[in-house]
Length: 217
Image (tube, rainbow, N blue to C red):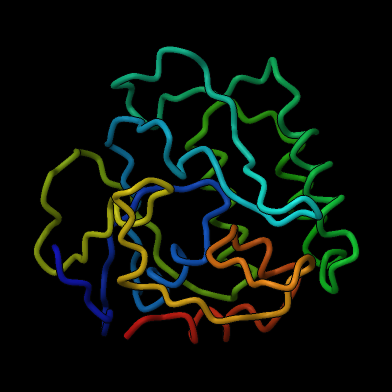
């Protein structure tokens, strides 16, 4: 579907799984009751599937999950994480350094650190657990379903947002997300559309209201 819909009763959206998704991702899914996660696609490199962005004292920094070689045309559920690299430890150090003085860091940090310390073998499983935690923090009760077969077109009545939110030129996030400024940890200029952990650490319970204000109607 090219036209974005505003949800509604028993509304459904189809979207891919991202790693610690950005604000546009949560802004996009918030009006919907049911989230269909695309589990039958092939993995796409240079996407949000294995990366997110946070704000540090040195500016915006990318956190990337290293994946095993051979991901070209590989089903997304089969993509393995390269745990030969201490990526979890490195990412936690970056997050802790950037946000330990943020107002709500101590409240959310234990859940996040626990996931990063787990020995996840598959990227899909890691992303699913991160999404589950973020939805819990928001207090959103969504039905989560998974596609079993890849279809170019979504079923009738399902809003298809696959590929709308991308770190590359094909990004359509502006169709659903308009930045709502909030106090961040560093700098004098607001940096929009970071990973949602930036919003949680800086604004805590206000995260839900800020996402609602960020929805482009």
